[in-house]
Image (cartoon, rainbow, N blue to C red; front, side, top):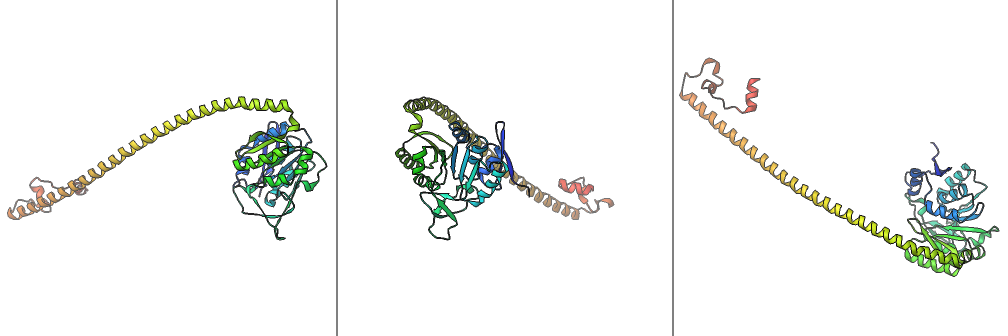
Length: 349
């Protein structure tokens, strides 16, 4: 079987991903269909604030969408963490395929608040990377869990991306020393508003401010206040205020188009209902006409049968009228034809 290797294009640059489950898995399928990185806007934001050879941690690497882009396109060094061997095997293949062994280190472990063990709650064929870990103290648990602080990384970490299906806060709690030391950019997923509130409370205590949001499942960008300075913070939030006017105009335009679409939808439904009523009426008339035609046919058959009987009676009463060639059809001898159209055809045949 041919290796499931697919190209990913970013401008003039190209790299390759190994995507064995692209027919089932949503993210892998999107990568094959579009041939561009998934969550591209966030990757561009990450690249914009980093320099070549900066060290980045990709916690929850999945099939390697972020890891491979950051290493192959942005020229960064990446330490990736992915506990699922079903994803690690093709990711390791892609790292070697793109000659990134010197830039990417992959740890096949989960990441949490402290060391431990875990297992996957369930397998999701349509989203293999969306499987959440369940902590498990038993020795039989197949997945090792570590904390980022336990790695004791010597080089400065410039950014941390965390997408671990609900364990984001645990990852941050296990990285307090690292974050306080290096003050990296944080790109953290929070699926719900309550998740965001809890996340915001933690990062504010670490000296961070909210900067931006990306992706369908919200991933939030936090920057340490020391990275920015007062002027940058003021300018940023002033721009956010200006953007709110654009958002209002976009929302108004979207609402107008939505209203127009709703009107067209209602009009189309009304037309469809009208056509359905007319079709039902036509069906009723057709059935009535068909029924009447059948009744008329049967009535005519009965009348013809009655006339034939009368004719036979006449034959018995009037002798010697039929010529020799008309003995089988005495009515013809009288110049009469009481056959139905189909019977006439048969006679001609």
